[in-house]
Length: 409
Image 1 (cartoon, rainbow, N blue to C red):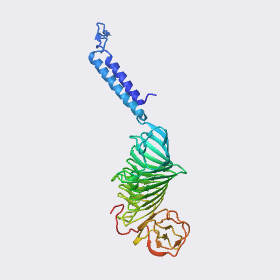
Image 2 (image 1 turned 120 degrees about the horizontal axis):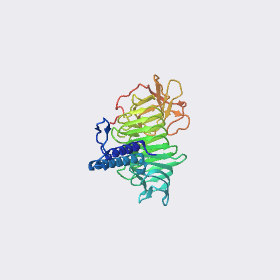
Image 3 (image 1 turned 135 degrees about the vertical axis):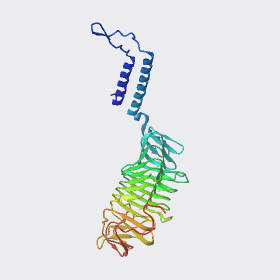
Image 4 (image 1 turned 180 degrees about the horizontal axis):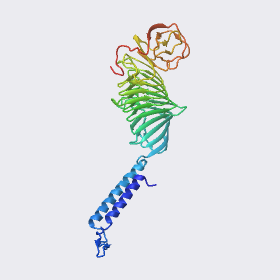
């Protein structure tokens, strides 16, 4: 079928060519009988000027047609591929778009690539300019002694899909300038229902020079520096809309954006180191929470979410540093606690955002004691806590002194 734009260009070109090539008819002359007569055309071939004009119109029409055809079929310039890559004593690639290298595997075309097996010391690199790449982690372990486990160098967008029922691990090492276990130079999205353990042994866990989006998956990040970092000043946005996310750091922020952090769903537990006054959530342009459940700990730089947040939150500022493993319980009056939690790092502040938090209610904060049930990542089932000591009260309107909203020291 000829696209409408192309048909219009060709039709116009044909009309102009016809007009340019038709000889001009002389004006009718009056006869003695008053009947107008038309003289036969003296010229039956187009003039040189008309011929040149027709050539120009035809050339322009041809160029326009080429542009329209190219616009209609952009996929022709964006090759896609698919391959299954299995790591082991040797690397097996079944499909197109990927090749083995001295460091592991390089992906050079857009498409979907399924990774499994164990790569003991190497890297998966994506170098596919202008393409969209989806890496499906289907039971893979990738370790690199000198750099990232996954390096997303060039692509329009990249997605890491965690295959349902699989466990995956990526770990970095060394002192590479590519300072994360997963390092991306483009927007990066995580989705799926599988498990992912990210070990930022040398630097950060997950880093992007643009945006990071978490839509799903059970993701656990342990990092020396920032756990998750998007570092384009004033531009980057970290969006969390689903899944389960646990972040722990040694000397960095838990989740750090040089722009915004937006949480619309999922469960987020993030611990920032109080070393160098870091926090579980740190965003230059603020943190907005409109869904999900969020628990964050850290130093005095941990602050309340923005006014645009629709999920209510409590920010507890403790007198002095609380040691890792200290049990914190929050409850309203004699009701069952809405939070029983033992942070895995030393902390000075704790933020809790949840649909369980109500505006206009005064909550009692206690530490210590014994909780019932078995904890998961420090979070205990809602239930009574015996032997705890009350340390203060808090409401949704409480704004502790110190620090600055969404800011850095």
